[in-house]
Image (cartoon, rainbow, N blue to C red; front, side, top):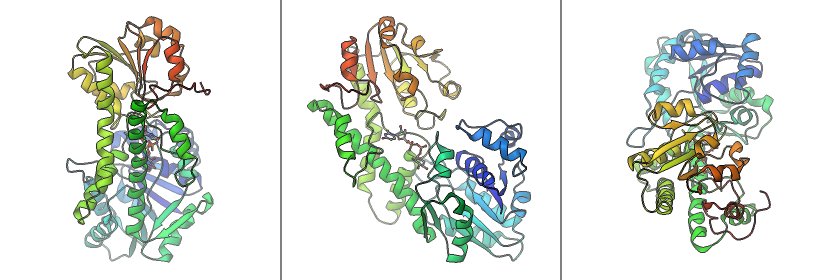
Length: 440
Ligand code: UDX
């Protein structure tokens, strides 16, 4: 099948690459000429394991192409995927301008029947909106259908998630159209849900909102555990073994970040509000998420005798989660901004996100590695749980610090071991844990 993918962000680039890898001819379009030039040189605009090789392979086999020319790409395609960004606005509503612009472009280029697929995370009703825009702007009287096919890929494992998704959701106006998209996914042999457009759009939001709820729930349980001397690692393990609950997304920490959960929770609260439903649970989930880093910094300030003024704080991890260089809505941004506002000196290190971090915080020091950041620090804070931080020589870290205060925002160390090593150690929900964790 000839496919056009509009937008070469995470979703678009990975979707386009995977469809070409499955044997389709794919043209990826972006209005950012610099990005397209980069891709044509074989350079990736994002860090994603396995992506560069997949793009290279399919370009060499002449199945994957890049262009800035939307008309050219749409004219040659049977299926057009819309994968452009829907960044949040101040009200919490996603900014739909890019989608509207693309829909108008598709309308102008419509030369024969095509299926237009919305892959961007968009509020319920967007399918109808795209259909109306194309209907009113098309130049030729050509038929088309609009389908919703939400993406559930995670950054850092985007290729694997696209090749082996838990489920494929196709929301279509009728069965015949659904089958056309299903055909594209058939080689993956994964569970499929064929439904109407509005339900498919809701599945995406409901799933992300539920995962965010699990995280905020675990964070609140962790905050209680810290006070009552329980070990949240044991608590969530015990909860997760109940098959009705499941073990995933119960890891407590500094809260969720990234380009999806904060935006999608806010958008669903707004959608609910507009139809007269107060999504109280989700508002609480968002509040818990906003409070989590503040709580953590309050504890750190108290450990530093009540003030950050003039103290050197080492930050380990800047990306919103490991295995990505993405800093969008990363907890590190909020934490560093607050530390700077209270006159702390900040030194930071991340295995791959430092270039992105420099654009946000040009004024802080960046270390060559974790040891560099710990040197002469009054406190060391783990913000992102990169694997390499789990294997550090902690004795060396401790002896190089001005004060051995270790704040583990992602629970990567064994509290008992850290205390034995002489750290003033705090984490999220296992600070007073008394049973050694044999995993460490
Ligand atoms: C998420 C969804 O998982 C994916 O299905 C959707 O398509 C896009 O949004 P992503 O943003 O890449 O993917 O990251 P994810 O791995 O889900 O983590 C999101 C945030 O939650 C991270 O900040 C992570 O640190 C945090 N998190 C996750 C926790 O704090 N605890 C957990 O147990 C799991």
